[in-house]
Picture 1: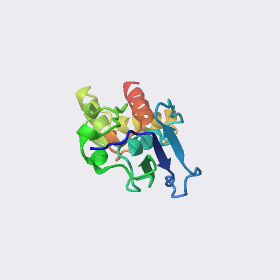
Picture 2: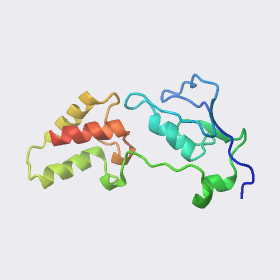
Picture 3: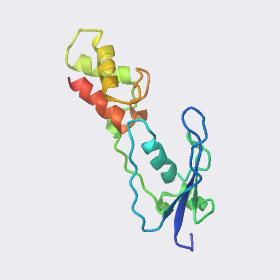
Picture 4: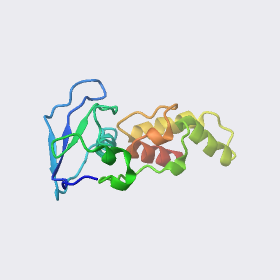
Length: 158
């Protein structure tokens, strides 16, 4: 069990999607701070929150590291849910199933008894007009950002 309270969580930079180093030295979050994470669809907000939740050690897609009180967090923070001081409730729900986008849309087409085979592609194209980051037919539904998911569901309802 950890004996000292958490005074600070520090996020150290990793790399962008293109592999470029992130342009900050460190982001310190002090106990009691209230922060907002904002940005356009696909900008990495969910990835940042996930890195904090899993106490990244350069082992996530971003390559970031998260320190607690200036050090790697105790192993029980990382491995034992009963001792995790950070919880993540995402905007993505797992009820969407871990289907590929095209499979998810095809399921909707079948349930609506539609026979237009081009509708899946048209729906993805319409969703991509709403979102800043392209939605690919083979992407997993559970891997989409919140903005991508909303864009896809709006397009699917149209």
